Length: 231
Image (cartoon, rainbow, N blue to C red):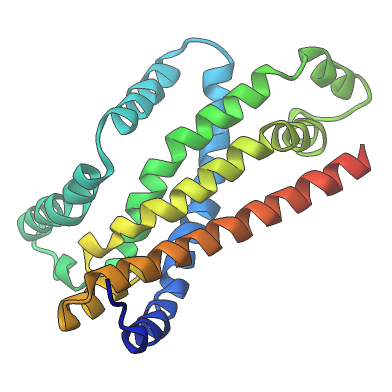
């Protein structure tokens, strides 16, 4: 098999242009989903309730439905429904002019919240309730106890699982090309379609995702070491 190294060089440059979009599709959904997931985890960790049952249905739905179908529902079906509602309300708003990146943020936030909430719930259930009672006995509010005592312990306990989740999220963004978002995979597919060099294109994105995930793992390992040093 003969590889076209000139094409590979061009593909690397082109795919590198998609890295900012990939990082945005990871970081922005994480910023949105982490606090929401923690709140859902608090509700679910406190035992059965109407709200926790609703959240469990949501979690089960995301677990059961392939990501490509969720993209189809949000990117293709949701605008149709919104457009019908907007027209019926007589509003002057064109949903089809919305930036595709917004759909990407919605999709990856939607699928991130359930997994993160279960990660946080597992961390919360591993913390003795006596710690919260001890915090309240020295004058802390529930919010202060959560910020200074509970959340740091949850993050420390679940750091390896969070690392796995973030690397999986990076890989999931490879389906963003289905929403016409030119991230790493989207750039590679365009380059491959123009030159029929699919093997070289997929080799490029293989190593790009490998490097990105490796860097994320190194960052999490650094956090683990710092937390271990503090302890």
